[in-house]
Length: 391
Image (spheres, helix red, strand yellow):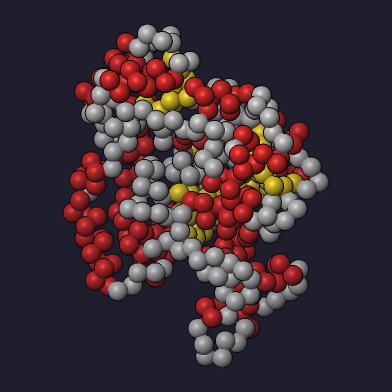
C-alpha cells in the first residue's frame, strides 16, 4: 500500500541527528521551555521573516492565545473560511467570540477574499485567513479590508509552514501567524507543538503571558491591556518569589516541549528542500494526470504552494477511493464537513447551500499520496491508477 503520508521514512533519513537531539534533552533534565525552545523560537522567527516567535503546545492553542492577545472575547466576531479543520472555528468560539464564515474560492480553495468585506459588522474584530492545503490566501485584499475596518489579521498557517505569498513567508503578513507542528505537517515534531510568530513586541509579550497561566511581568502587561490602564511591568516586585506564582489574567498551560524544539531544530534546515520536493511531485501530478473524470487543484500565480496535501475533486468519491485502495493506494478526505454545517454551530443559522464551494469540496475532495519521500515508482503508480479510474 502506498500511504497517504508516511513519517518513518523522514525519520530514517535524519535518524542519527534526531536521536542525538532527543537524548541531549533527556540527559539535560531541562524539559520545559529553556534554551532549546528559545533558540528554536529565534530560528523559526528568522525563517518566517518575523521579529518574534512564541512556542506553544499545539496549533490550536496558537490560535487561542493569539486571539486572547488581541483582546478578542465575548460579543466579538471573527471572520474565517468555511473550509478548514475544526480547530480554526473552535479557537474563535473558545474565547467567547462568534465565528463568521466566508466561502472558499472555487479553484484554489482558500478563503474568498472578495467576499470578506460583506461580512464585516461593528462587532468584527479580526480576520483569520486559512492558508489551506499549503497555499496562501489573497493577503493583499485581506490586508486592505483589515486596514479599512481596523481589524486584526491572524494567519492560520497550520498547513503552510514555508509557503509564500509575493515572496513573503506565511505567518509574516498579518499581525500574528499561527503554525502547527503536528507530526504529519510539512515541519512536524514527534507529538504536538505549535508556534505564534509576530513583528509586534506587545503581542509577543502578551502571547508569552497567556501561554503560562497569565503570570509574571508579561501577565501584568496583559492585565493592564485587559483593564485598559497603564502598567509598568519592569517595576513589579515579586518579593524574591518566582514570577510564575503571580497571576494577573486567566491564561493557559501551553508550552512547546524542549524535546520537540530540539527535534524541530534538526528538521528546520531541511524544510525548504522538502517543500521543493513536494512541489516537484505536484508538478508531475499536474502534468501527467489526464483523466477528465478528476479535477486537479489550481495553484495561484502569486505565491509558493507547498502542498501539504494534493486534493483532487471527484464526482463519485467513494467509488474512486475504493478503486484506489483495491490497487494499493491510500487516499484521504480533508474535510468532509465544512465548518458552517458542523452540528456545534447549528445555532448560528447557516444552511446547506450557503457556502457552495466549500460544500462541494467537502463532498468531492480527495487527497492522494503526498510526502517528500515518495519514490518515482510510487508517483508513477499513483498517476497511472488515477488515470485508469473510469468515474
